[in-house]
Image 1 (cartoon, one colour):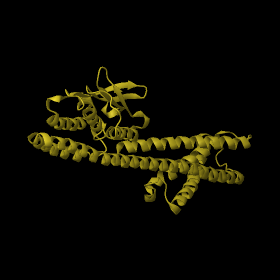
Image 2 (cartoon, rainbow, N blue to C red):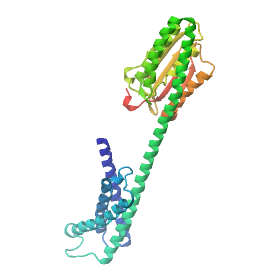
Image 3 (spheres, rainbow, N blue to C red):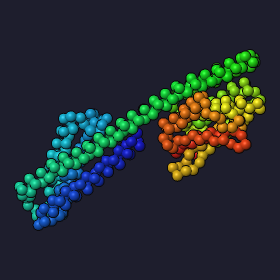
Image 4 (cartoon, rainbow, N blue to C red):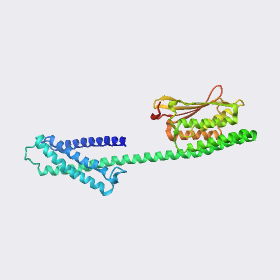
Length: 358
C-alpha cells in the first residue's frame, strides 16, 4: 500500500510538470500573437489557471467512486468534473494572478483592469487548453488501463496454460510409476509391496504439492528425492543418485514437476538399458549472461547415452519445453546433449529472479 501511494505521488508530480510545460507553451503562443505586450503576465495567468484546473480535475477524480477501476469517472460525472475544473480553475487562477501581477510583480498599476477583449481571449484560451489537456490525460490514462487489463489477461492465460500442462503431466507420471510397479509385482512381490507403500506416500506429496504454478526449488528437489528412492526400491544397487542444491538457491521459484520428466528419461532410457545401471546427478547453479543471472539445473546420468527419441521421451521433453516457454519465453531453454564416454545431460536454463539471487 505504501509503495502504491509513493508511485501515485510520483505520477501526480509528473502530471503537474506536464501541465506547467503545457501552460508555458500556451503563454508563449499567446505572446507570439501579441508582441506589443510583456511576456510576464501571460505566463503568470497561464500557469496559475492551469495549476488550479489540474488540481481540481486530476486530484478530484480520485474522490469519485466510479473512477476506482479505470481512474476516470463514468458518464456525466467525468463531464461535470472537467467543467467544474475549468470554470473554478479560471476564476481562482485569474483572481490570484490579478493580485500577483498588480501588487507583487508590478506588471499593472493599482486599479488597472484587463480589457474585456483580453478577458474574452483568456476565457477562450482556458476553455480550449483545458479541454485539450483533459483529453490528453484521459487518453493516456485509458491507454494505461487497457494495457494493465491486457497484461492481466496474458497472466491468466499463462497460468491456465501451465495448469493444463500440469494436468497432462500428472497422469503421465502416474502411469509410468504404475508400469514400473507392475514389472516388479511379477518378479519380487515383497519388494513390490515395499515399492507400493513408497509410491502411495510419494504420490500423496507430489499431487498435493502440484496445485500451484510455482513452488521453491527445495521442494522440487525433495520430490525428486522421493521419486528416486521409489525407483531405488525396484532397481536396487543398479541405481545411485546425487542431489546438489546450494542453500542460496533453495527458495528460487520453479514450476512443480519441472524436473520429473528429465529424471524419468534418465532412468528409462539411460540406466535401465544397462545391466550395471548407473548414476544420476541433479545439480543447480547460476550462470551470468547478457540478460542477467540465469538459473541452471542439470540432470546428468551415466547411462546408455543419448537415446533415439520415442513417444514417452518426446512427451516429457515437450512438456518441459512448453512450460519454460510459457513462463520465460525465449529466455527459457532445455538442452539435451550426449556425454563422453557414455551418458546424457539435460540442462534447463531460465532467468533467476532478483528476489532469489544469491
